[in-house]
Length: 262
Image (cartoon, rainbow, N blue to C red; front, side, top):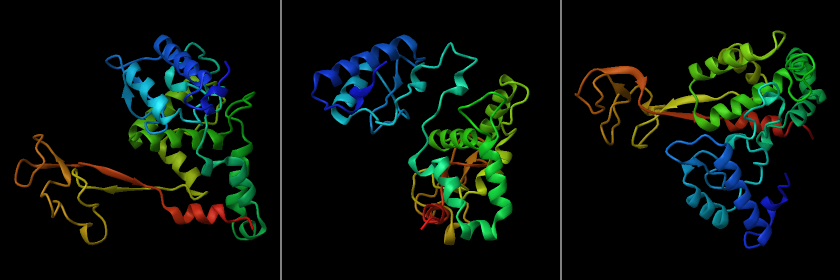
């Protein structure tokens, strides 16, 4: 299916026809919640769901996300169980595996981190399973963790997902068994992340001078979810689960990786 219309002017006939073609495709193939679909416009980027009419308006006004060329969130891969993981998933531009491996292979890095580089090179060259040409052990972890960060999956849900995928794939697959294993791979390449507790009303993040506080100094809401469903100070016994978590991807390791190559 030709998708060059995605980059065409929004007022062109080709673009308008392409939008209608996409909406028809989504209506036929995409699972919905209350007749709402993921919106692929440049603002929603498949994170928010809207009605087809709202999606049409978004796409005409804001444009179609240019990197979303494989409509995996609208049912394109449904009905292809044996090959669903063989389709390449677009990664963020800063996470291009080939560039990353090449930059880490520069002399300065290899001299001091030869063992790390060798492990990465091995993971990058190890196919997901025998005969798989689209994913390596490293690239599939990068793809899955990108989705995890994008949609806010918990560590437990990520582990459950990879366990399910590992059972679906051929027995010789090299997919990580848990979030912990995936994290060990990514920490080698500066892809580590931090989870920081935050106020439910976005007043503060519990770090620096607020790191040990149990209640927000501004709105007085509890840092943790309350067992009785309430969240304010003095109401119920707080649980051990934070009310809100902010995912932070440290920029310094990414800059180091980006500028590893002269």
